[in-house]
Structure formats: structure tokens, C-alpha cells
Image (tube, rainbow, N blue to C red; front, side):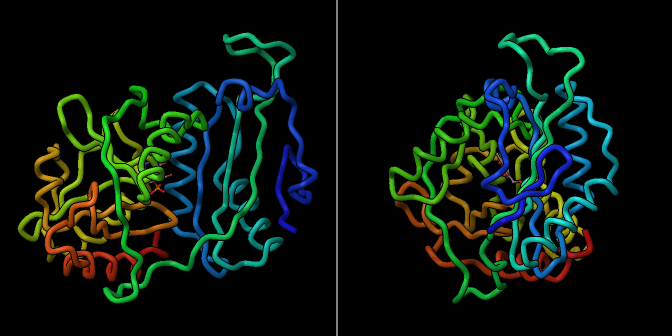
Length: 285
Ligand code: PLP
């Protein structure tokens, strides 16, 4: 049975209950994180917590937890839940009100909820063993604040479902100018002529921690050119390689887009180099 944390207490997840007037439930009024951990070692703990603090500040949720408070919670959940391959889900909503009213209530405490779930073992940098991904494409119809890791994920859910119903693993999203933003639950990268290219950070995409770590390990290594710039749909469809990244997938090679092969249809050499660097460096973040 998995042990969760809710408002100061640890308990079996089945016993964790919130009020239906919690604004996270009624409005999706909250911020969340997922920190991956393998055999008790977390990847990107500090940047994940920094992003959550930025998100909380951006939506005006006041929670005075320090990084070490979050570390204590994460380490306790790892201990309680067996230190395997775990995603640690952290969730802060604005809290439970006494009525349903859009304006921020005064004098309510945020709800803090956390639990762990099993994630797949991390991908190995091996072309013959890595899981490959098939994706759909669609117009990005989410809101203009995609840089905030909000619990209001209906837009993302609908985009993910679009790909899922077509038998695909993810959906690549394009803005009104046919420029790549990200995927429904991942950031996106392309490779053209040996260069790794990903859209720049702005309000159209989440500043992914995997994206951040990957760009950093590539730049430190210095052998593969890296660009953060606008990526057009034509470039995505004619790229040599396409990858999607997230905390649980790490660097995931995409081999089919809307049923058509990416590049030569095989997992690419630049992917192999990138996942090798990521695997070697990820626990340093
Ligand atoms: N983009 C979106 C919309 C996401 O939901 C996620 C992860 O959940 C990502 C990108 C990847 O972020 P990270 O690498 O921090 O997991």
C-alpha cells in the first residue's frame, strides 16, 4: 500500500481525503511537480522545487516551505514507499474554501498533497533496447500560460487523448504560426544536420527540467551544437531525428509522426549520444 502525505500527515493513500470545496478540485487552482527517483536518488530535485516555487508565486499561492522542507517530505516518501523507480508527485492547491467563488479567498491555508507512483526503469542508452514513440500532431489549443505547471491540465489531457485515440503515445503541438511548442506532457527536440534544436522558453511551453538538464549536459560536453530557436512544422516533419523529453521518459526517440517515419525510421546516432550524456550526468542535478 502506498503512503501519501496530506496536510502534515503521512497515511495510506486510500485514507487521504480532501474537501470537495478544495480549489484544486473545483478550479484546478494549484501547482504540481513530479520528481523522478531511482533507488532513492532523485533527479533534478533543486530545479523541480525552484520551478514549483516560481509557479506558486506566479499564481499567488503563499506557502512558506523551504527547499529542505520539500527534501524531508520527498525522502520520507521514498523511505515509506520502497526506494524503487518512483515518481514523487507534489501538489499544492490554494486550499479549501467555504463557498465556490472565483476570487482568491483570504485566510485559507494551501492544501499540500504528495504521493509516489511507480515509473518505468530509466531508458538505457542503447538503440536496440530503447522504447520508441509514435506521435500525432495537432494545433495547440491550451492557454497562454503554459510556462506555469498548473494542475489545470484539461487542455493537455484533451491533446494527449487525441494522440492516444490514434494509437499514438503523445501529441506534438503547433501554434497558429505552425511553430512547434511542445507535446501534451513533454518538451520536444529535433535534430537537423547534427544540430539539436528546441523551441526557446516562453509562455507557450513548460520549462521542462529534463529539457534544462539535457541542454546543460550537451553544452558542457560541447561536441553537438545546440540551438534554442523557433522550430517550424516543416522542420519537424523533415528532421533527421525527433525526441520528446520528460522526467519519467528522459530523452525519448520519436520514430513516427502521424504514421510517417522520422528520418530513416530508425533511432538516431545523436539520440544515442544525448541519452548517454543524460544518463551519465542526471544525478548531478
Ligand atoms: N511539458 C509539459 C506540458 C509537461 O506536462 C511536462 C511534464 O510533465 C513536460 C513538458 C516535461 O517536464 P519535465 O522534464 O520537468 O518533466
